[in-house]
Amino acid sequence: MSKAPKCPVTADWQPYDPAFRKDPFPVYERFRRECPVGWVDAFDGFWAVSRYEDVFRVALDPETFCSSEGIAIPPMEYDGRALPMESDPPEHTALRSILARELSRDAVAAREPMLRHCARRLLAEISEAGSADFSERYAKLLPTNVICRLLDIEGD
Image 1 (cartoon, helix red, strand yellow):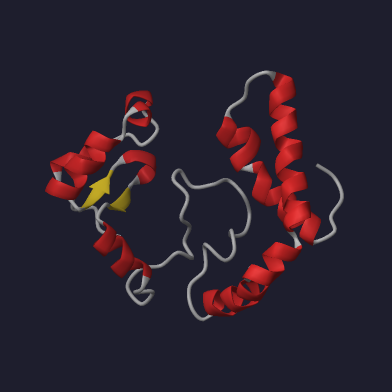
Image 2 (image 1 turned 90 degrees about the vertical axis):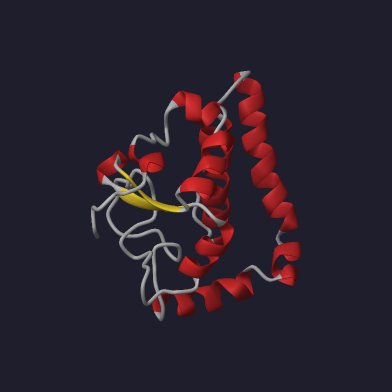
């Protein structure tokens, strides 16, 4: 990975800065206009791609760009990888074919009652608490809860 930043837009960008999180859209617009691909120093550095066309091209070019070294910013602290997101072909292709069957329209429709149960349970917990960080208490937990149910793993 080259650390040759020439883009002034991304050099000082802090993805988790409260001001940015409150209103990120002016920064995104500036990125797309002035620095569609740029180096960000935060979290030991990473390349940011900001235009749809470029993101699409990157996603379709595993020979040049990889996901297997991690995709989370900042890097997540766990052993292993988050599959299939942190995999590249041919491994990603094999995983995707397995998941595609399980996530087909008919398969998801058959699981709708279970999916609704998981979602409602988490929402009830948030409601009982009175307030919550929705990302932490719902968005991060729902996929895990659903996967645990699919794998017949007990617990919350």
